[in-house]
Length: 239
Image (cartoon, rainbow, N blue to C red; front, side, top):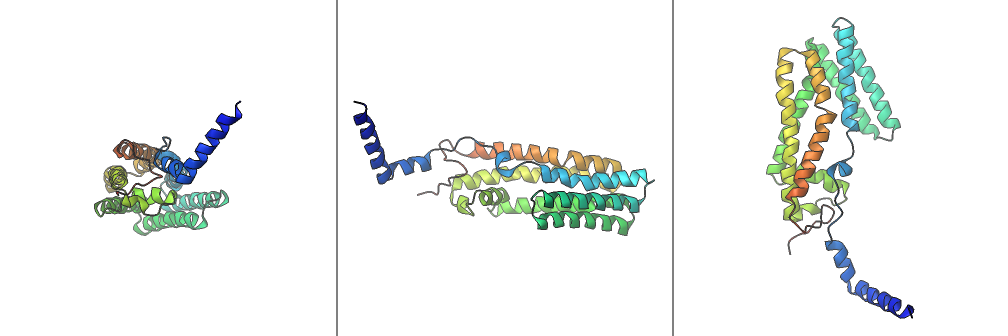
């Protein structure tokens, strides 16, 4: 008795699959809610980046404000972070670039003889990042779209979806704001030569600020999408 309904259901499903109806439904059905944090991952790299700065300040302070000791402590911490990243499955190039960044900061401080200049490369990096993110939005290639689209394997398909392009642009302004906040805090501290406050700000404005930025930009991104949009994974170009 129960075989006929089952056979009828299977036959109907088979017709839907062959006609492409089920595939169309699957493509247009919105994805389950997800967060930008899930897509971008945690703030481990941001946390690791603070360790050389903390080591520099501690080495400089404990040694009676010796730049050489601070530099040695920062390079030791930077090398340790690079090894941990590499052994943890990270890309060797990324680990090497992180260590080179620490080396550049150390060389600047040793060259000028000013401990606060250890943070100068970080200040300039944030200035450059703010400008690059802002320009990417203005030329309609928002960096957040490039990052997320790359992670999702879409390349630039998201740009053909006006709703996604607009959402990525709005959310990218949050990232510009992140760098502007750092500049607003770092610049006066650096100008005043306040090494200890610079070290504290480096910690406070690294992974905590990144976490806030990811969460806030994710909220802006998903709220900017219109109702019924299939989601980040399914760009919908206009007909």
